[in-house]
Length: 147
Image (cartoon, rainbow, N blue to C red; front, side):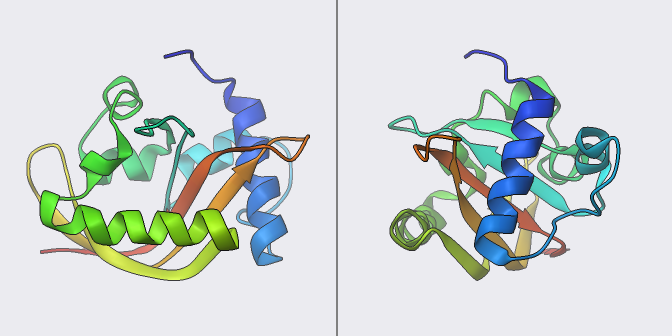
């Protein structure tokens, strides 16, 4: 998989988030790439492949999923959910593809070591490039608890 340009991808995440939710994900100022990576909430994104692969996960997301950057960005995003929760996750992603976003998702995810955690009030949104082509989806959540 090709490496992403973190500065461009961070701008894409932030701009698309603002488009769908009408609010800033982080306080706009210098060093937005570093701010997003160090944010106290999880931010993830995946591409638009047949079986989408994560292409971004900030430090909070990497910690929750117990994976480093290289491991997380090689993972098909469907594997972030246990098999019994994947159909529900796919229904959500289909809704986001149609509507553009979801403002209040909740579900169970699993880390690399098998630890399960419940996320609540997650926001999911479509990523579109400057020409308007859908190139993936992103998620952010700040409310989680270990199960």
